[in-house]
Length: 260
Image 1: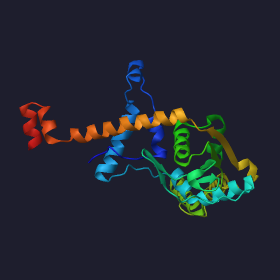
Image 2: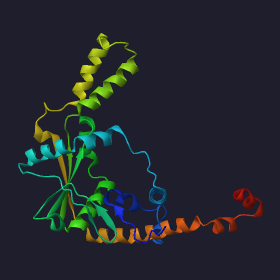
Image 3: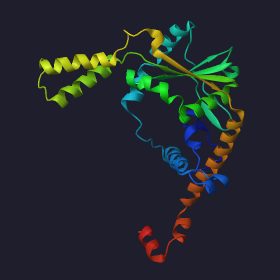
Image 4: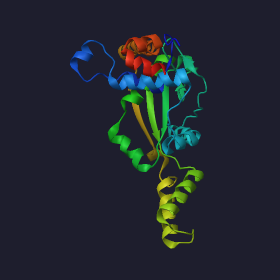
């Protein structure tokens, strides 16, 4: 398989931009161990069609409430936003920005990425965390694809879907060994659980948190340089799978074991 033209998703870009720990490795332009680990996953996904297990309650809620978060954001900003469905790509990257301002996505003035928080605690923790490297580079990628000069990262706090609340309550029954839904301690715990997962009582303006990000052309060029190195690394992994290369690197006793 040839990885010379593989495109990286914008959501992946932060993994490619992690710098090596040592000064020597940085100066020589090496890829970091974190980047190499991610590229091994990319290699397996593309060559063998396998996916790592990325399913969890945070991702599940995010997918289920995406439209609710966009609606909340639109109401707070007093501007109608519709989710963008256009998939974009260039020579290096690909992605689908959530929202944009401007006449069309390919010539956007700005892009907006919506993140749906799991609960009120994870939502407010973003106040001190700010924009993570992973989100920063994701938005730089979107700006590179659209031509936008600015971006916004918007965290939204919306109610948890009823199906997820019911799942959590069922797990709670098992954890408490309640035996029946009529157990008073269990009923009280369910009420507290639902309160912790529903947020409509909080003013809408307090349930949207935005961070502004400016386009970094120098950073985008560095990103493209990293992608070239990443492609080279992936092709080297492919070459290393050649049986003759593997056998030549071992003594005859180990070779016999491999052949068997």
